[in-house]
Length: 385
Figure (spheres, rainbow, N blue to C red):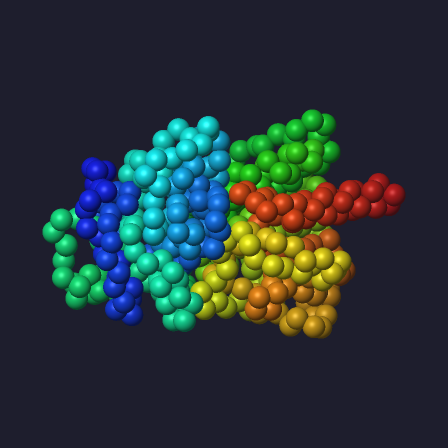
């Protein structure tokens, strides 16, 4: 990716998909070129959390909401220390941000962090194209002297694909750190950072959990050195079929019978650990308005998603695994994609979406309480034994 941070509002820009479809607009953010997988997000709010979510590493995000940037950028809402998206596509960027917490415009933030974007294109048409053809590689090119379309298309087709990409170690912390419990400490959790969002350990800390966030490369010895009451596997980018180390680590946790909770990438890791396959979705689920049913209660939740891969597990039967019986606990009501797994004979469960509610909705916050209850049950049983 090559960029310039000079003013970009009137600089021409071109978006080129790998199937040859071309959209012309204006530069937004940094001027230059960038490549990634084109995906669309259906959320109407929360663009700052989206941009800073490490799960979007190497993805060019198309916003389906037509007006983006109206609340600017603040210093409280980022989910990590930087913007992770490879590129950003909007239809109508706000000319002037208006929010009491705003510190700068979104355009300024994108320029400052060197993120190449494009504005002024028909994002509805682009989204419809991706829905029909599927997520694909894309390039954004901006500047006053652009290559011809054939050259740009050739560069897009040389970019790496998301399938087969092993990315979690690229976004995870390099050093372990601790998020202390808020109020009285009740439990200790080892959280494996595969691309964790900042709000996730905070939600656990609110429930009296001291969270030890460990690198994606952590070993079982590293995990149990913190004497955890539970182990958490986070969200993250890339193809779960490449995640052999996290799968092996999760199997070690399952062997010990430690309470386990996984979200997003962690759900796919649990699927693989149990012996299920994973596959790439045509265009994935991204946004904060995805309907999911919790089959254990029958409740329907509106949930936040960011995943392009899913677990291939049978929806309507209990499966035998090396760690006992397992079943699909949650399912997407739009397309019947597996959105959660649980073991019936060991204390382990996972969901494919984001319960930390940044930037919302809050329907799935109960999952952190479910994890806390699971740890409490195992702790009490251990004391009785």
